[in-house]
Image 1: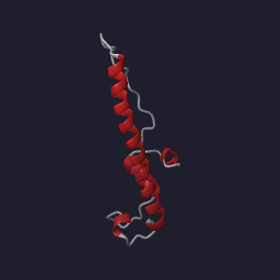
Image 2: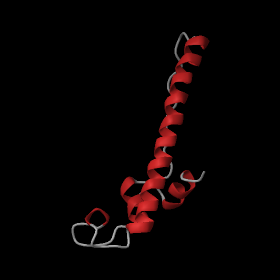
Image 3: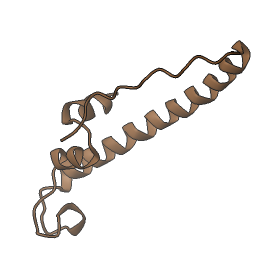
Image 4: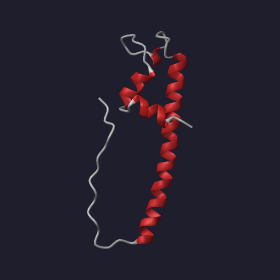
Length: 93
């Protein structure tokens, strides 16, 4: 079963906090986050389109499980641990 909500505890506040250091750190993190978000969206789109176009062909080994069962977009989302509706939403342009 997928988890739709991840709860994080707040970190403890540091004794000394530097505004400029925090800004620079966040710039780097936001840059990585944007690129990661784009990569995730691209991989989701690629998987969904491939499964939509070829997933119904059980003879194609990369789209079928070892027991010959056809893999679907729903199976894919379940295996990566993402709710189907959320994956569709993340893939929107």
